[in-house]
Amino acid sequence: MTMVKSKVEAAIQTPGIFEQISGYDHEQVVFFNDKASGLKSIVAIHNTILGPALGGTRFWNYNNEAEAIHDVLRLSRGMTFKAAVAGLNLGGGKAIIIGNSRTDKSEAMMRRYGKFIDSLSGKYITAEDVGTTTRDMEWIKLETEHVTGIPENMGGSGDPSPFTAYGTFLGIKASVKEMCGNDDLSGKKVAVQGIGHVGETLIKHLVEAGAKVTVTDIHADRIQHMIKKFKVNGVEPDSIYDLDVDIYAPCALGATLNINNIERLKCNIVAGAANNQLADELVHGNLLIEKGILYAPDFVINAGGLINVSDELDGYNRERVMSQTERIYDRLLEIFSIAKASNSTTQHAAMQIANKRLKDMAELNARL
Ligand code: NAD
Image (tube, rainbow, N blue to C red):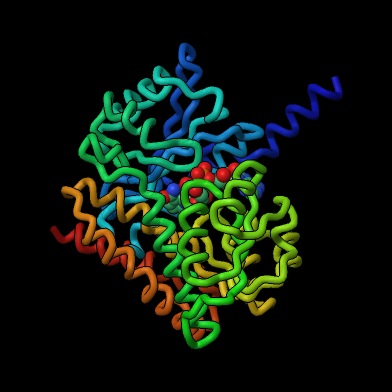
C-alpha cells in the first residue's frame, strides 16, 4: 500500500508533459512507436518562425523516458538558437530514438522511422547526431524526402561532422584570441572529451596547429587509437576535468558544465562541440565567469554541421559552406564583446542575438 502511494505521489510531483513543453515554448512534440521494429522515438519541434525545423536524430540508451524527453526538448530549443545565430532560414527541431545504437538498430527500424518523419510533411527535417550515421540517413531517405546529411554518392553532402569540427577549431582560436590577444594554438594545452565523429577531426586540427592534446572517451579503444594515430595523451573519462590545461573542449554529451565539474576545472577557456554543455544556463554560465573561464556558447561554435546539412537543401556548394562556417570565428568575437559590454554571460549574449533575429523575422513574416 505504501509503495502504491509513493508511486502516485511521484507521478504527481513529476512535471506533466505539457508543463515541460510550454516551459521551453515548443510548438509540437510527437511520439512514434513501432512494436515490430522496436522503434520508440520522440520528435520535438521547437520553433518554425525562420523555416522548417532541422535537427539531427540522436540514438541513445536513456536511463528512463523522463531523461529522453528532457534531452529532446533541450536539444531542439538549442537548434532554434543555432540556426538563428548562424543566419540560416531554418527552425529548431531534434529527434531521439531510445535504444542502444550498436545493438538495437536495424534497417526496418530506420525505414519505419523515415515513414514517421514523412508523416510530418516537411515540418521537421532530420539528419545525423550521436548514434546515427550517413548509412541511417540513406535508409531514412528511402521513405522520405525530409532528410539531409545523406551520402555524397546519393547526391548529398555526406557526414557533417568535419564541418562541425572545423567550426569548433576556429571557435577555439577565436576564444584564445579573446583571452591572449592572438590566436596561436602552438603549445596550448587542450583536453578533448569524446572521440567520436567530431572529436577525432578536431584532434587532428589541434595537433596540426601545434597544440598539446589530451583525450578521453568511455570506449578505451578510441583513446588507444588516438594515441597511436596522433601521438596525443590519453586519460580515463573522469580525469578529464582535473587536467592542468588551457582549454577544455567537450565533444561528448551535454551537461558536463555542472556544479561538480566546474569546481574541478583548471582551464581558462571552455570551447567544444557538444550540445547543451551548461547543465543550467544561468547558474553555470555565471559560475564560469566567477572562475574567470571564457565560455564559447555551444550553439554558436558547433554550427558548422548544421550549415553543411542545410546547404544540401539549396543544391550543395562546399565553398559556400566553408565560408559560412568560417564566420563562426567573428561571430564569437562579437558575442564575447557584447557579453563584456553588458556584463552578462556569453550564453545570454548569444541568445539575445538569436531572439532579436527571431523577433525581427516574425514581424517581417506578419507583414507579408
Ligand atoms: P559521436 O557519437 O560520434 O561521438 C561521441 C563520443 O563521445 C563517442 O565516442 C562516445 O563514446 C563519447 N562519450 C560519450 N559519453 C562520454 C563521456 N562521458 N566521456 C567521454 N566520452 C564520452 O558524436 P559526434 O557526432 O562526434 O558529436 C559529439 C557532440 O557534438 C554531441 O554532443 C553532438 O550533439 C554534438 N554535435 C555534433 C555535430 C555533428 O556534426 N556530428 C554537430 C553539432 C553538435
